[in-house]
Image (tube, rainbow, N blue to C red; front, side):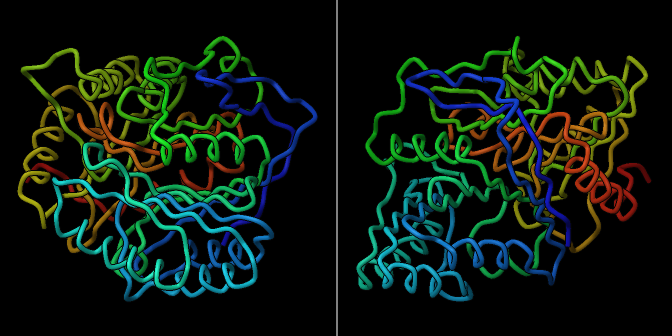
Length: 362
């Protein structure tokens, strides 16, 4: 669907307990946007191709999975049979027993076939969706591994082929498996990423980190022309003014007040009353404060978590704009900064969603 982009970049590296951003002017990465509309399988095709090409390892981190309706399990089993080391980490949170039950069936299926499959700490919610192949190819975004996510939902993901990015996320994955995420969190060197150079910034978050929100709270006030957001879940918390969700919503309102083109499209979450109420409250609040807002098309599930800034930078992954996702969950995101070839593809997709969307006013 989209062409590859290969160029010199600045790459974020996970080193020790600090996420540092370093300029690697001679390094290169291949980036491929993956945009799935209902009925399409770009993500599945890309992941299948990556697994089939694996030479040494595949690491899979997932929030939700199912045994049926997922052709990728056969690819994993075939890779394991030819000697590729497969490691799978799934969520086992108490908040969604039906998801955990599905994940248990996946664990049983994979263990029967000799594949290393584990659950996360039950006290932690893993909401990430990420595949790492040979420590150098990363596929991440909004897609869980079930037939509904594959065939019925709006989804945004990206393929990143880079030893630096792959190494960063692999170290994160291994720390999750071993329960040794840094207790004091990690940080981003904002001075380096503010330089006027292309950059890829891995944003792996855990219960003690907020890299994703911290980066956005640096980027949104610096936006010069536009901020376009397509988000599955968005919340505001009047009783907790210091919450990261409130700060992000406030940054959008501030940008609209500066005269920028700020538009937000939110899923109506019609299947989940709690999420629907939160999204409606957020939509009304944004509308009242001068931000253009629409709900997604009727009978669509827009599962994306996508932000496009100035048409040349994009932040995407698994994080919704609510308290647990921003401040407590295990989430995987990435910022692709000042690479317009990638951002423009996602921005064109946003425009499609926007044109299909519905006003929140009668």
